[in-house]
Image 1 (cartoon, one colour):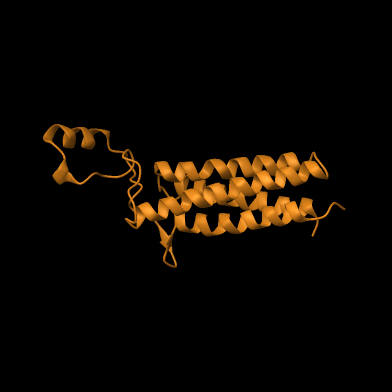
Image 2: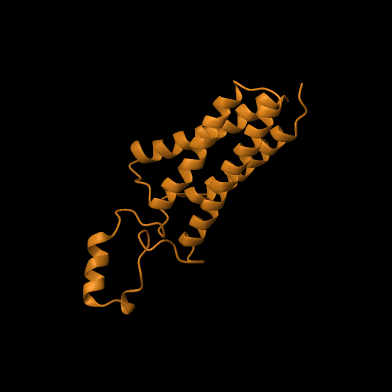
Length: 157
């Protein structure tokens, strides 16, 4: 496969994941949490890099492919972090998860209730085959990162 083909496959994979996320949000009525939104940005960068790669050749495409790999591995890393928050392996951002009630004063508890996000990062809204959306993003984005790296390693035609 050519470098351009590999780049287009990787960029199309990110576009498909973004479309899926927007579909779950707008058609499935599953509002995204803060970490879900963070996972979307690197995919958007990867799609833009794929479009830019069409204008370049040779070394330019190799650099684009390396940047695409960084974007894909970044969203995979955010996905891993999100899975850890969902599984209570570690705490997530304070604005996205709940603090233990026993440690809060009445005023702090009221403040937490009033500023609580509509969607929490530590609750799994949807899963398939034992993986949440964050988990699927992690796995697929890691694979896309490998495709980007394969594109970077591809010899110029």
